[in-house]
Structures are given as C-alpha cells and as structure tokens.
Image (tube, one colour):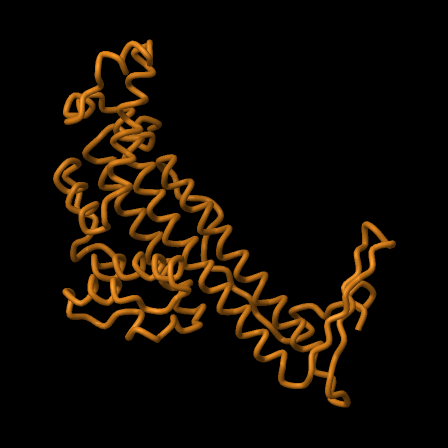
Length: 279
C-alpha cells in the first residue's frame, strides 16, 4: 500500500462518530490560569481523538481479506529523492503494534493531564500573589541584602519573592499542597461539593510519577504512599500496568476540569485575581 497515493476513508465511510467532550474556551469570567488549563485540556482531547481515529483507519486498511501481510511504503512528499522505508506487517502483528501505540498514547495523555492540573494550581497561586501584596510580607525566607542589591528594583524583588513561593509550592507532595492551599488561601481543594476527592487526584498524580519513572508499573514507593487511603488504586500491584481505557481518561479529564472551575471560582471570591479584577 502506498500511503501517499491511497486515499483514506472518512469517519462517515466507516460509520464512526467522534465526540470531543472539552470546550476550546474557558467560561467567562475566568482567570488566566483557568483559561490556560481549558486550552491545554482541549488540545489533549483533540490530539487523542485524532490519533485514535487515524489508528482505526490504518487498522482497517491493514486487513485485506486476501493477504497474510501488508506493506506500507512511507514516502516524503517534500523530498522525492529520499529513499523511503517499507514496513511489512504480518497477519496478527498489527494488533500488537496497535496496542503498544495505544499504551504510549495513554501514558503520555495521563502525564499531560496531571501536569496541566499542577500548572493550573501554580499559575492560580501566582495570580493571587501578584494582586495581593500582603502575602509577600508573610514570606518566611527573606531576601539577603546582597540579593536585594543584585535585583535592584522593587519590581524585581517582588517577582523574586513570588517565584520563590510558587516554586516552594510546586515542590510539595499533593496532600501537602492541599494543606497549604487551605491554610494560606482559606480554600479547600477537596470537599463534598467538589467533583473529585483528595484520594482520586493524588492517585492520578502518583500514577503520572509511576509512568515517568517506571513505565507505568507500580513501584514500591507508589504502593506505600497510597496504602494509607485504604481504597482501590489505579495500579493494583507491583507488576500491574495502567489499563488502556480512553473513555475513563476523558471522563476523568472532564471531572478534573470541573474541579479547576470550582477552585478558580472559590479563590476569586476570597482574593483579588484576574477573574474578578476584569469584572
């Protein structure tokens, strides 16, 4: 098969219906942090949808009923002189390749989703600190005289203090972040009216760490950290890996973005932010 000249069937040709659940824009009014996380989530779900659709189309084209193998010739449209490689898939090999690609896609999507949520919290804190100077006076680690003279202007000093606070927050474990948010900003990140519990989000973030550090296989450290919750975790045992389930992932993503909406709303009720300063 020549992937350059053979037309791909459309989703309608194959009877597919693709629904992407995230909006491309955050609801208004919004903070910059909430707008950013909506954009990141939308990019993720669109990317996942496109890859899954493409995977399905190629899989359909890779199963001619009268052949045991299929050859895919990869050509460059920009440079015709490039010698293109040919991939030959024997009958049954596509399923293995498809599963491996799906696993990679799921892992990268979990990492993207978890990191986007943490960036949202960090950006929201930064937003509050920029508009509520009284919090900078509570900085426990004050700048030295040498640092002050090196920075020069009051604006640079202010920026340095904010960067330090945001970095200190980012380095905490998730339960400690929740405690700090409650203690300093008087906003609970998890309670009965919010869509996700502390355990559910903490488990998801820990699975991201497991994916990054041990390719999705449950580490002893992960099992030990999550054991205290006495609840069923996403990874069950040392040699288990995360189940390929994009329906679960997108549903969790919708719940996570709902959590971001609620957190942003509650913070704006207590502090000056981009959200309430724009109204």
